[in-house]
Length: 431
Image (cartoon, rainbow, N blue to C red; front, side):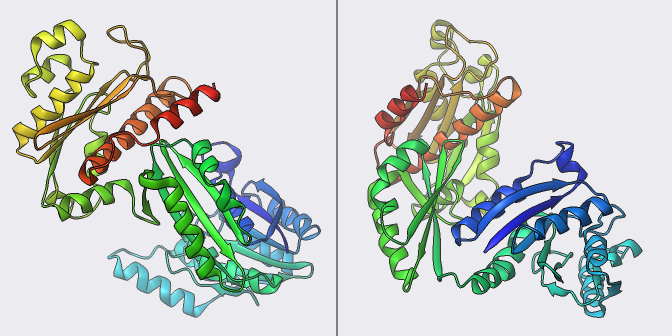
């Protein structure tokens, strides 16, 4: 099974939107053993879309398009596919009914142009979209099928997983698979991959590494006669090899894990933030019901506020400046006491662009204060990829992850810093 990807949209060609759909589709198809032979981006032009579809079907067994299925005048994928098939666009009464019901349920007025999403090429099969309004389409052309999916990422992924992938797998005679995504924090991608070399060598098992700022997700896929059993064996090995750096699975994000651990202990947390400017608090308030365990925070960006609001020793600030491990400890203790929380989390550091108090950009101190003790992790210099605002944003995001992971470790009674030697060695080797 050879598939070509065709993503549609002027915003992709002009760089206004990153083509994340193609990257996701490529990974997903590869996991199922479907060969992606080419990816093409085309603008919102009718003739260009028709030509691109025809050329792709001349090389591949099937084509998957994303984008151009919305209600506006520049959404032309359905028109292009009708033209390529030599048929008319027809109004699907069932799609129109569902669209009207969806709009009414949202308390909105249906705009006439929205009914374009109920028009389909004559003879096309509608692919149900349980996540949104625009349906997907399967159009059979002389050289093969075209699967047209919406450009909205979560809608595209829903239709792909629920409809298109199972159909492609059946057409290609691919084996059944089982899949699970595991989440780690505090380890570099190369360290994670090195530890899991023996799992990658297991017959029928493939691993995909999905790195983010200070986190690496590992997608484990097992294929064969008994994929669920094989997945269980592979997952057990991954958990053993990664140890306490593995914090969750699937949608268990770090903030959700922290809230669960706090709730299980009847505990609360408060935050004191300098360089992150409230990002830790924002992360801890994403989950509904987070107010049961997160009390609030203090953004003490100015040095004097660290003393006035959090009680950090004036002499310490005068001698060492705002970026110092003892300052981080006192910030965590101060916010814990002042807000009446069981735990306090604090961060201070240098986000740049210039050094501060003689410390280079990337210097970060993270502290957690709990009953009877305050822990502080020193990040002597986190990597700061990119320049300017990009590097600041990356550093701040990494600091959020380190802070939440330190809190997780304190709550579980683990060592404060997982795999620090491995991470440092990996950083040095990678330059």
